[in-house]
Image (cartoon, rainbow over all chains, first blue to last red; front, side, top):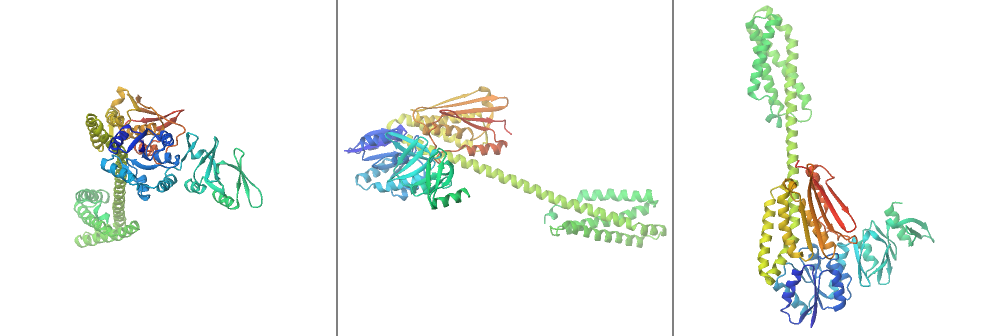
Length: 244
Length: 343
């Protein structure tokens, strides 16, 4: 039996997918979800083989939801009209369905999955990187335990490299995200965030003062008193942006 | 070469003015200088015929003068033409008339005639130059206004198109599902979608619309949204009867309501209730739209229609920046829109 999950905020949209899926006796719909939050839980709970995923959904979109899921299931994306997403799909050779979804096209996508030729997970990972680097740089979605948290970029104090993760620090606390610091250095506004150190990406407006530290290095004292080391190159970058 | 098209001296009025002037000139000679009527008439006729000829010639020449320094040049030409025309007049009369008293008067009067000729020529040509300039400016102004109008129309049309695709494809998707699952409802939705599209097309030509018509249009739009989101969307519209006859610019209310629905549906989870109220305060129409809002939410980049576009349009229409105001409370977002009478 193949387990599938439908994630779309419009009941009618799920209805038609279920209807089309009835033709495939080997596929069973394990869950239907109204939004990404339910989606994350359902994927965790049922460990589906295949996910039909709408992109435009309440609060967090389909791409953001996938960022919170590990391991990634096979995904067939569904969208009504999103030129940017379509380009990303094409570029990564990922299958997607356009609304209104035709039965023939739907069957073809499912057949591709059954033939094991549907988007390898690596392509989906690549896609997520492209999407979050371009479209979503005013917020970051993280998961803490079973809770999904949306962090507005303007609430971030700094980001710190932490093994394979990045620690995103806000006034509320620290959140881990399975990304690299280099990724955020690229996707966040360089006028706001500066890589002041190999392990730190700092939000400029958080700096209260800068003090000399050991030879050629400095310390950034943040508004809340925290201290962040600044390397020689990092200090150079800061000087350019702050115009000192 | 615009000067040639815009000769101040159009033929008929010019001839009229010259005839009157010639009579006045002769009368002046008769009364103030004691010339016999016949002599005065002849004198006036010759001098003024030549002055008129000089004016016509100057106008023809002015068409071929370069734009820069046209003023100085026509002054020079006026000087030469004034001298020549009056001198020719003097020569002609000296040939025709033998009265020695008159001939002495003719010689003595020449400086006055030259001066007068110069002043007349100069006045006419300056007037012609300024008139041509003014016409050019007026033309440019008209062109400018037209360009702006066209740009505005284009912008409107673009905004209109911007609203459509997402809505249309999602509606078709719902329709597709209904055809398979609930055919009777599908038929109803086809009707609703047609009503909506027909009104949308019809509205394209009308920049102003009554509140009543706009609300009726929004109802058709909401009927479709209800099919898609009926399980969680509720919209309460409450408009004062007296306010309904007021006209509002097209495509102002619709994007606001769409925005409210979008932020309500996509920014929160669970039931979304949108409130729309319209009241008349003195002559201004005041419209408020409230939607639920989650503070935690940062709208995803590029997902909003944006209030900035609307603000710009209102500015173009009313030259006021204070017509659109937003307030954010704990869990609601309110847009307050003031619509003054049509300018």
